Image: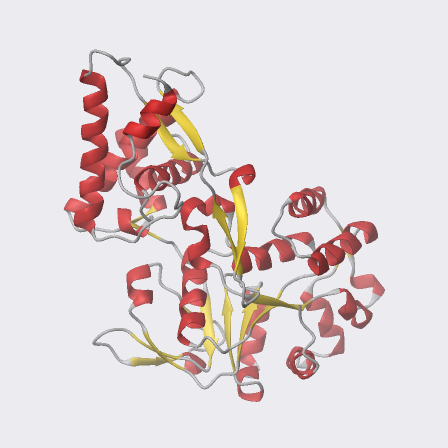
Length: 384
């Protein structure tokens, strides 16, 4: 049987033209795994087919990514189009990856039967002990989980895998878990309210807020300064941070807040460097690395700062030369289709100048300056 025929025989679950991951109850996920196993065994037992089958997975490389945009708004997000890659036991470069898919599916099936949830880190150590010939790094586990998502067309959370979270939220937001007391995020101290990795719990949170803005803050130290100064009392707002590159749980909560309060503008405060812009774009568009789930966590984040117009506030001695990693990130962003023109202009200036500026450089004007900086930008609607 040709690879194309195998693809057709392996249409397990959903319309092949829709490349997204479903959120499903455990019983349905177990059923999909069982169907996958039965299809595989059927191919092995067929006298007219090879002894080994290929696994057709939606490709997760940049060439298969597209940006979807709504007609009546400027909301947009990354999604994957209809293009397959293969994991095959007969090819030396994918043989172990082929086996890893079945190992992870087996482990997820056990997790779902036991009605448990695990983090990807916990999953790694379990697989390292049980299948050390095939798993030697966390990256292998992470990639294989995405392979399973691409094969079964269901979310990681549906597979029983929790998101590990670094994020925090503060400000004018009341949160209530089912049957528990209300948490006032304005009274959680400078570190804010720690975001759980349990996406089911985040989905079921009851939220109330009188905020007028949501600020996505790149750095935890800046988040702490804004929270410590209680800037949310001067500007009615919610602060949220992933403490660097955004994890799934923080992105999920931001998306959840934006759904609950759709009229609140979401404004991003990041360093003026390619990494800061990459973080902003991950919140705004999603990430290719998330595969079929990329679109699910995208939010319409506007770039508040730091931007080129803010550089006059920063003393010359505070600039830092761009590192090779910065230039690598810049090259990747420029070559992608997701970056809007005014973002590309900012990025080109960064690269041309060969330097970067961090938010902390604004402290030259005093530690309390950040609140005034945000207020002025809002009044002037100075964001893109």
